[in-house]
Image (cartoon, rainbow, N blue to C red; front, side):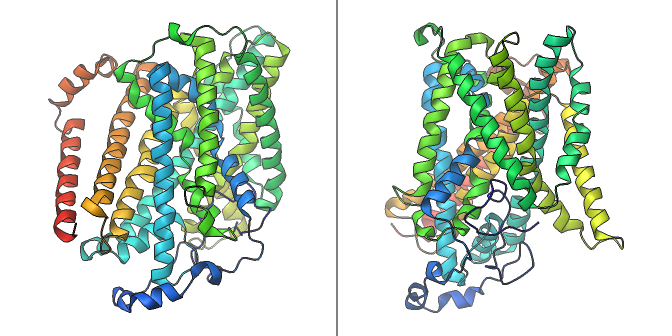
Amino acid sequence: MTTNGTSNMTELETFLPQDGSNGTSGAKYKIAPKSPTSLENGHAEKTSWDPFRERRIEHPTTDCDTLTHLLKASLGTGILAMPFAYKNAGMSLGIVFTLFTSLICTHGAYVLVQCAHELYRRTRVTSMSFADVGEVSFANGPTWARPYSKLCRITIIAGLFAAYFGTCSVYTVIISENFKQVAEHYLGYAINQRLCILTLLVPLILLSWIPNLKYLAPVSMVANVFMGLGLGITFYYLVWDLGSPWDLPQVGDLYNLPQFFSITIFAMEAIGVVMPLENSMDTPQHFIGICGVLNKGMGGVTLIYVFLGFLGYLHYEDATDASITLNLPTDEYMAQSVKILVGLAVYCTYGLQYFVCLEIVWDAVKGKWKMNQTVLEYIVRSVLTASTVMLAVAVPTIGPFLALIGAFCFSLLGLILPALIETITFWDKGFGRGNWVAWKNVGMFLFGVVALVSGTYTSMVDIFKTYGLGEEVVQLNTIGEVVHDATHANVSVANVTDFVINAVSDLSQTLLNNTGN
């Protein structure tokens, strides 16, 4: 289950954590940065060594190849939830905040790659994974940050696992919902949602038994075809019988904004793929820059997300569902084909998300038991797949669950950690006139914390409300009530927020004291 930088890299390979050793070591997630003293050898030595010329890839990808992979990775199932996100934010606010979220998510990915390029030169390493960048930045940063380098690596790996494990569960719900609607139309009676999810257990386990990426590549190609056809037919339905956008709320309920941000972050966040894509490029310096691959790709993705969110909400208004395909009529063959196509596409794409989790878990357990390793691997594959299905059975909701993943995992990985990594990486170099980079990172960090805390809280409230769990939580319908309740809790959101604000204030003051204007 290893990856490479070939030009025919599958969609799955762009998500897998990459080995930071440039192919010379078999140990996953291992990198040997230079000691802090070795980083003081002089500016001339650092600039004379070019990591991009030293990088050796058997089949490197071109800029066009990388752009294609970025588009494939970014245009996932999250796009189906964008009309629902607009329903939460309002039409005008949805457009503005989608652009804002895209900007800040893209910037998080940008600074991560920028820090990686800086660390390449310092450590004389030609490629790193996301976890490598985090660990090395802390290990070679200021003295106070070095003890936390391993913690940073563990946090990134755990965050990636949680994000894609949860995504697998969301995919299971989406598959079952699309198939269930079509089946109910022809059977004439309602089907239990949890039972429908359980029927996917065996097919998903069989999919998880695909041994390697070579055999999964055709499945990924089929998924792209199915999703493309499904989205094309969906757009056909959305452009008919449109009303006036001014008849819809332009600004949504303030209480629903955290869910909007959580869903949009989930849909647009590409932090898990940027380093693998950069690592496979023939010209990695072209990945960033004003007209770099990242900005071009995310610019196009943003327009598609805005367009679908706008049309979907305009067409279905308050009836907009958590996945736009669920709004399509069930008695028309073309609409039924969309549900089946999207269901099959998500099923085929399940392996993409699943292999990220599998790589992390397998690296942790292989060799720990004295038994046939092939048998152990298939046991791990089956148990991991069954766990994602059981989670979907326990919480068979798309919107709140999807928002929960975006709020908790991708806010941490895509916003909070990149801000910290950039601050620590360039600690000794300074942060520009007026320390604007430091203040920018403080703002990015705070936005990530607010998105994480508020998005996680509102998503949990929505999940509880959906299943009637905890009436005292369900009754929290306004921000004022939430704040009032939090002020009387022993461990509250307000307390956590105050702690974070104070910590960031202390950090920013330290930055000002340690860097010049």
